Length: 511
Figure (cartoon, rainbow, N blue to C red):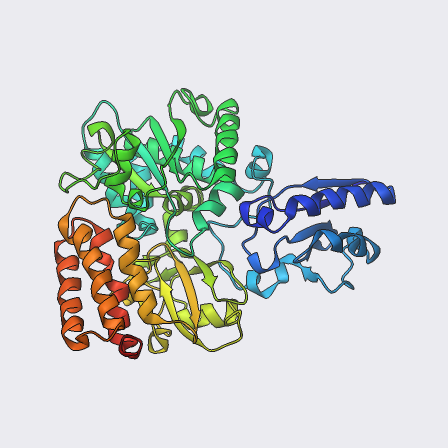
């Protein structure tokens, strides 16, 4: 009887040597004359333990990590095939690892458990049940279920998903589209990538359900070009889903159609903004469109279009399987369900943590992150990507909730959390925010294009001690102009991190 061994094959694990570890495991199995079944699963998001090798035992899967190629022989000698726990790299039963056990996993329930490309694995873990339910319902009933869930956009704006879908459903048109924004460009974020690399059928299922809900027959995944592993896995998963009848012109014999393609982005951060993304999808330069009209009414190729983030669409299969109310039982206030949070930067235990809205930032960084990697005191944390505010310790007890963050001038965004210890120069971080905008601005509006350039110059003068008070006043006015006058969130939010440094870390601008 063979022993099943799991070695992740997502980007993070591969970067840490997972292929070499897998090859060494197979070589050791041959050397010991034992039969194994090697499964290349996805990561569970415990990046500080990658590559994390798991072995299936009668008691459950036992984890070892982080495993290097040279550790494999000693692991075999220590009883790896029997789930032996004597080796220093043993983490015990995977499901009992506190980092994982304390999470509420709805979207990432299958991540790391299944073979990402196995439809049988996906079905064995409730896969495609949501789609099967959706095929039995009228479009309005599907939209109503999503409304009942309280699901909001997980890409940053947090707009209610059901309202967006309702708008597209109500719009008369011969052709409608579903567009998945997979241009994950925020610093410290990787949740979208994990969905696509570790559980791609969930995204495919969510998009197909969205198509049934609004009457769209064509979908596009707009994927950032820096994700080659996700690109390969998505294309293979789409081909297999078509062959199995979950996509195409006759979904599960229903007579209903939904086709899906992956389109690669061109490396522009601004294409994370939905209208710029649509321009790029149409083969044009990624420039922000003025709104109105909204993409839900005049979107891709001028047709009604649903544009949702990966995490928003990935939440839909659970909602159509278990019900909107089951999803809404998690969370707080208007923030329902769970949010996949991504811990990065100067952190001891970086990775993905899926929790119901309401946990505090401090609990996330201490209980899961374990503090800084350097062991030094934590000084600042940036939440919501490069356009998010830098939060001082006085704000670390904020509940992770859209409204609670907005009340403090902060954003949850895509759930990226980047930590900095007490060696950070916050004046340099403020400058980086403005400089990032000068590089990534589409250039269509003056406040963003010119304001960010002037912002870098003003911050440089402040740091050099030139007319500091006058330049601080000028920087304040410039930030207000960018917030109020920019065409989209690129220029409108670039001042947020700068303003937070001026408010909470003024001493760094006075050195």
